[in-house]
Amino acid sequence: MTTPKDPKHVMLFIGVNTGASRSRELFPVFGQAMGLINVELRGVDFPPDTAHTALRPILQQLRDTPLMRGALITTHKLAAYEAGADMFASCDDLAHEYGEVSCIYKDEKGQLHGWAADFDINRYILRSLLESDHFARHANARAIVMGAGGAGLSVVQVLGELFPNVRIDLTDVDAQRLAWAHRVCQARQQVSVVDVRGGSPGNGELITAGGPGSFVVNATGLGKDRPGSPLAASDFQWPGWTTIMAKVFGVELTDDLFEHVCQTVRTVDQA
Image (cartoon, rainbow, N blue to C red):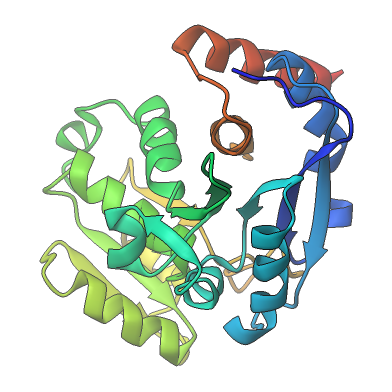
């Protein structure tokens, strides 16, 4: 690995309110633990429902600026994929299937590549949270995933891979996201896409109907990008940041380095 030298190499952080994110404070800790120097995290904010056309100028700037190494995208994964469709030299298969990218990085020629990183990150997280026989031990349990955007769809995909027999309720209040969820989930009989705009069944009712051991995910952005809660009445971000920073800055992420970085950041964050 070639460690970036002065001047600083930049990783963009594309979100809604990046200035208030704890990740901004911890970015130098990530960098130090990964052996990176002279790297900078630069926030770029867009409202939650921004059209993909608004993201094109920032992706063009990323493409045309050598010192910009890549980007992490949170809320705008679907818009970023659409905005950069003609700028990406390649995207992975899941990015094409789901129409989203959560990481953009450059190759040695400076070409942009899109990666639907959420799927790999969520695979790691779900394996750490749920034992392989979890739903076998809880016969009436189900998974309720609130939010049918990029984050929610990636959770549904990985849950289906790891637990092919579990019932999954995927909910949303946005007609466009519901329509997209129906299209990408139509071949998955275990997935029920639920429109909760009318309030019945609502998210709370679905959670109540789930048996002991049910697994609930808030992928709506409420409580993070916008105030509120998906209900009427744990932040596992460190694996994601470690994985995407390694891709953007060209770090070989071994298992030992991965655990070292996550533990270092946890220690600082809890201090």
